[in-house]
Amino acid sequence: KQEVTQIPAALSVPEGENLVLNCSFTDSAIYNLQWFRQDPGKGLTSLLLIQSSQREQTSGRLNASLDKSSGRSTLYIAASQPGDSATYLCAVRRGGGTSYGKLTFGQGTILTVHP
Amino acid sequence: KAGVTQTPRYLIKTRGQQVTLSCSPISGHRSVSWYQQTPGQGLQFLFEYFSETQRNKGNFPGRFSGRQFSNSRSEMNVSTLELGDSALYLCASSFRTSGADTQYFGPGTRLTVL
Image 1 (cartoon, each protein chain N blue to C red):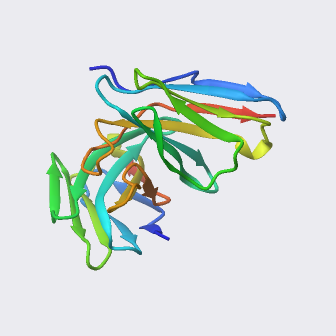
Image 2 (cartoon, rainbow over the protein chains, first blue to last red):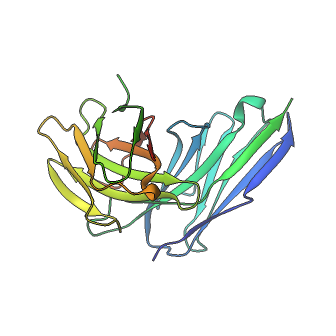
C-alpha cells in the first residue's frame, strides 16, 4: 500500500527566505507526482506535475524535483512571500492497471511566511 | 475556460439523512474523481469515473456511491449519514483517465452532519 509522508508538518519563515518542502513515498512504482497548494477552506490548486521519467519541473519561483528510485520529491520555493502561506500537498499516482485516477496524498506541510 | 464547479458549497444534514453532491468538470474533461478530506485522515480517494463508468473505488462503505452522466457531470450520494461523514468533499477532473494528465480540483462541498 502506497504511503506518502511530508516533512515538516509545519514551517514558519520570514519573507524572502528560500525554503524546501519534502515528500517521500514508499512504493516507487509511480506514474507521476503532483504538488498542490490549498488555502484554508478552499480546494486544491495544482502547482507542478512531474512524470516518473522526469527529474524536475519549474514554474516561476517553484521548482520540484523527483528521485523515483529513492522515493523522494522536494518542492523548492525561492524568495518566499506572505502570499505563499498555505498548505502544500504532494500526491502520487500509481503506475499501471486501472488506478490512474487515484491520487495518494501526504498529510501536507502548513507554510506560514511572515512579512 | 471555467474551472471545476461543485454544488452546493455548504450543506448541513442530520444523522440518518442522505445527501447528493454535484460536480461539473472542466469542459472537455471526461474523467472525474472524488475525494474526502478530514482533519484526521487527510485526503482520501472515493471513486473515479470515466465515460459514465466507475474505473476505480476507494475503501469506503457502500453508503457512498456515485455516477457520471453522458455530459461528464458527476454526482456522489451518501446515504444514512453518520457524524464521521462530516468533511470537505472534493471533485477533480482531467482530460483522460491516463496518468499523464493533471487533475484539476473544484472548491469542494463542506458537509456538516449534526
